Image 1 (cartoon, rainbow, N blue to C red):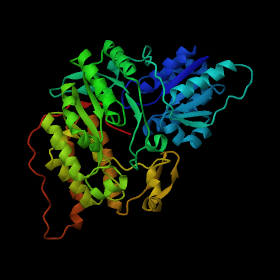
Image 2: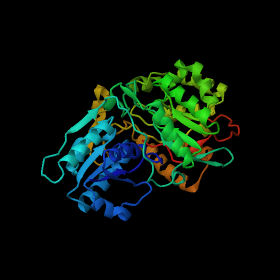
Image 3: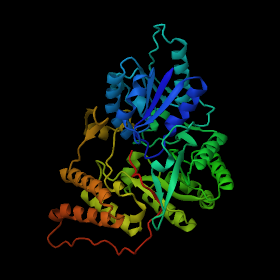
Length: 461
């Protein structure tokens, strides 16, 4: 059986979500082609798609799914006889729309074993007309993973790089040590699928996956776990073993503020084992917004964690949902002032200044009456519920900032200049509401600061 696994976007990384199931399917005898549309044009791979018996789209995130909506229609026209699948976090969340496009089988959660079992079923019934349609399913069963098969991907140096202070680059590999999350943040797309459950990838598999990527040129590993400290014993065991085997290899991880505070005694291990930076979804400095999102931390907690991280010498790279229904122009001003006062301008990817709250299908935010009162109908093209701010100027500011940020990336503007433009744009919106005798606030003096290590692919959801 000819199987094509398709990834549309995975944050600029070589997709684990293709390499892992490829190993399972090849082990069971399927002929597997992996197609990464972030690196390979669909038009250049039409022959393999036409010859496929099954085509499966990997949908780990919102952007990947939106891109896939167009790719699925094109693939359906190229090969109307192939069985179409979708799998990954966003597949079950958008099952109705995917089925309208021709997707016949959907797998969420721990997808490798169910997908492999389904392909085996197809191979057993190949050519006999048996109905092999499948309903949308979410499996949270523990799996014994296989080492991902990365043998037929574009080279690692084609993907996102790690930029170091001074302009030096490192080739980046990507892996996952766990999936799911113990926590129930209201806006997080992991929650509707995993609902507080997390699952590990066995240590020997993770290390073997990293080993093969180092052999392929990786100098840095990005861990894609929703929260690296969900299973802290598992995670620290991996990075200790990794550092012992590859002492010059660096890595980055994502960890909740709550976990960084709770496990403060282990932060030095991150530094000692080569952690280049830690990403943390801070989301807001407004305690009311943090409460509504059920983030499990406060503004004061974040300030404490920032102090701890600076003491141990590991940069913190916070991410934000800067625009929510509950922020005002004054609130956004406080957000920018706080970034400046905490000397965080160089730590924050510029796109974070314009991120707007996304409310996808199944979001726990929909349990809040005040959210249900403000949303419109589900937008099937955008794959989210649309909402408008009560102050139209806030929406206009967000739109203008987002448009500017897209251009600034093309121009190669430094983060400080982008931040100063965002501040100036905000002030142009605020001038009309200030009292006649009120003075425009000034940004605090900003000392020159070395840019922290960062990945060249901006952080999108």
